[in-house]
Image (cartoon, rainbow, N blue to C red; front, side, top):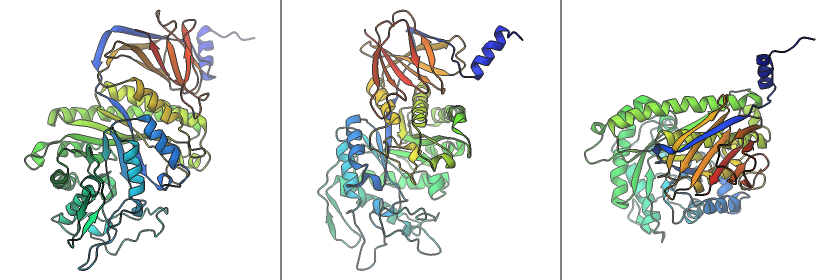
Length: 490
């Protein structure tokens, strides 16, 4: 019989998925940087968040229990009646202002996040404000998706007074108790909420194909208008779908803005997607590879920001993963939710290392036909899934102001495991560690970890909070796509 060499055996072991032990190293006294980052999420308005919908109670209950800051709220254009408060243009005798379908979901969001900072973004501009060849219809049923409610790249009112007036009134509805419409009639709401942040539009590079020049004009006009209504509100700009350098070069240059318009926060998005037709066996490589490509772009964008507008903060407020179209048509498996949760933990570590201020997972609720693969709530039972629980694990334990310390994975880690050690201002020591692969991996821990508490989210935890355990024997096992937080007593 042919004898295998040691090298051949090792290669064979890797090919069949037999994991090799890996060594974690942490130098608690070697601080590499101080974190500026906060873990958070976005909430996209859709029918499942309406009162009476099957996912409503579980979703808003989870959001309230999470207690996150900088939560982004986006009523979005595919559901015009849930997102646009003036669906028809005013006439000489009538206006169409109507918040009856918008308020319940919005108020539930505002109440669930009470006491925490929020980023509001009513991103959908009334379609009638754009020049189009014909009127753009919208579904009569508020629960019916209307992907056609879009189009138009030029405002019918080039002065943007219509646009500004719409948003001044909308914000006044929620912060000033009401507003006076175009015909002089007062509409009373009785609401007096505070908006800490307002983001100007969503993915303008896609939704109306704005140029950086056009968007910058809109941003400046909106900044001035919003501050007339809510002077303390900080404004977030861009919200880009893609990381196009020329957008950042233009928008972040103060010379392109009106005098006195600050650039407080910029935002943009990333979805690490599977290739069309790809089988799940390859996802663990594709999703992390695409995450790495995005991280390279972040580094370049950060160089632009630091050069042009170093005081501007960054909110990467849509981070998620997509399955292939074929997989989306089938029930999504537990393995995918754990993989996606692991990708978010990876994003959090790497974006924290790059000094990103707000790291937002997308999104609270998705469901079949409406991006089910990014949901943080299981749409079959309305319980938080692994993506939610990983966010909560990070949000509850790792904060801006924590020290990042020198951390590594040795003994041929091969990028299968990723880890970062943190020391809090109170002196507690923590390690966030994740398994990028669909196999179990044993991690040998340094001296001093005996008795440490471990919180783990993996297939065994399912739609439940992290499983708690204690380090025994000098090692821990990371099941496929597991995310663990190791906490040492001070």
